[in-house]
Image 1 (tube, helix red, strand yellow):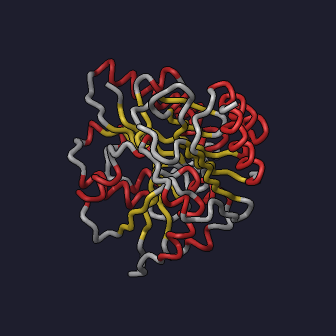
Image 2: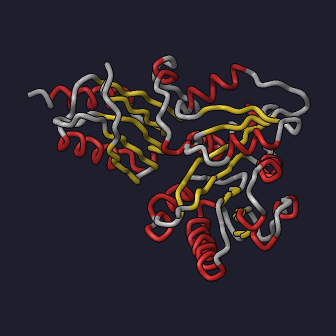
Image 3: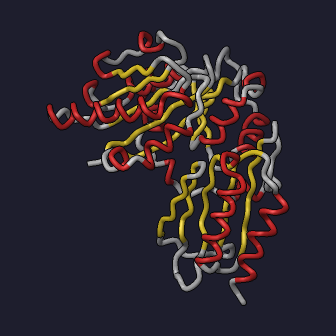
Length: 322
């Protein structure tokens, strides 16, 4: 049986450890059923001392920035988890990865969805990001924060000092990542409710809410950061779609962080889901019946040529009719 993995990231001091501790209190999972994997910047970790779980189930990965060292360490940690599970029959039911506050969660996601040994035993349930309501604007000067927001399936807004969530803040985040949703939280919240909103929600594969993208003028610029919404009402030939996506991956390489959407391929009754994390691209058959807009894609990245992408996406739909 595959084990769900929840990735929790967020800038330094945002409240990641606080959220994890509340989730552990509110979950029905037993201590030996949860494995916590930490990543910290620097040679000596301290956050593990703040976690209430048994230290035997905490894997610390120190010695470097997450984007430089975590991919290899995460493979090793999850392989060790599998070894323990197989050898002892320990009923592991959940893995929580707490990423460093200055980390890029992208390598974690790529490892979970692309490494064959890992993806055959674990599945990525959700990518969650904690932001500090009080210091959100100041944190945006750090590119790591922008990347964390770009990759998020759900954003937990830590309400500190009785400061309530600013709706302008939510609108700004939505314009940066239309794929995400929100959950304000504080220490006064029910631990059981927090656990329900953190664990086993399947947000990574959840159907996107494209209405938010339609209402946000289709794009957003912040430090060259963008989210684009592409749409169309005509089926696309498979060969044209594959060539377009290959060109997209080649031309933008590291500039596309996340892409998600549904297209209708010619001669098919149901839409195909497109899911991309950086250069890792997946197609998944669905049972979704196309509505008025048979093709909808959200692309999140930087330095994207909006006019070209809209024009070229329209062209492959037009050519599919010839």
